[in-house]
Length: 378
Image 1: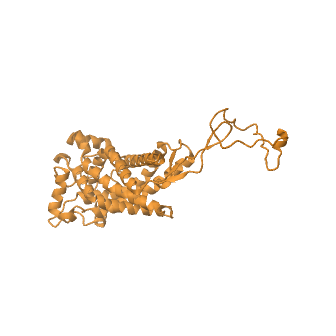
Image 2 (image 1 turned 30 degrees about the vertical axis):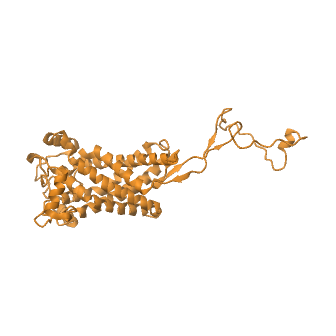
Image 3 (image 1 turned 135 degrees about the vertical axis):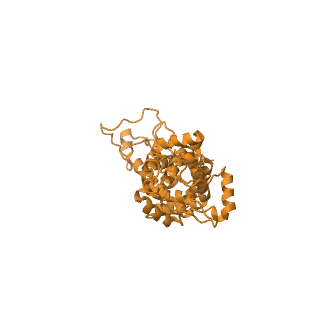
């Protein structure tokens, strides 16, 4: 049986110890020497007389039953290359389910940009009404706007993120004090940098809608490839990484919170023995606890990142509304108040929560499969 251990290693419980009469054990006990009675044979020096079980003890196995005792587990590790594929696949699957919430969240964060509360019409109100507004304006297909770019981003960012975190775990860095948080932040920063062009296109595609329901700047891209081509032609290769200053701290904070709290939360649930051992419910419970931490620390950074990615640029490729991360943070706090950083906090949780739960759940289950096949010698 393969048991995932903290840090992604798997414990394969094998090498069974067979014992008891008629159970295929080792050689039977030697017979009593000739000329001695059975009582005398049991009293020979070096032989310990077994005491009977107390009356309250549980009854032993039935005659002829097979008793299996597990030896100390051996470790089977998932390689960083496998973690790259597993992490990317898990997050892409989660993205398919949560992309409609990502569309609504993006428009809620762009609504009333740099305007005081109450001075703009609220076209999107909450999750359910927001989903309805998107469906009425863009059709049901509009709920999956930017899905292709979102899958590309999830594959790039999370593949790099899980790969780097697995390397740090194999090196033993995550076992040091604060090591899990530092490894998660570093892995997230590198993943955010690699996936930044895909997130740029995803944000701009999800913001696009009809004129009556438009919020934020409208870039009017026709497709994913057309968006990449347009950005490259107008702003050059560097333009594809415009807004990365907001993406890196966003993913650093979210990744460190997610990766660090998920392992600890899952261990905590296992120690309480509320759920069956090795059940996917353990991973689900750990993901639910982890998602609370992710949403709490990540929402302000997510708000700034969305604004930086969607803002228009001038002829030199510089942002028209914000010069960078700090400038965006200051302008939002001054013109929209500090509470604006938590615009749509409920919708953000309904998107980030399920995405965190699903991605970590799929990741954990994929790792169990890899461990199982490794234990079988594949």
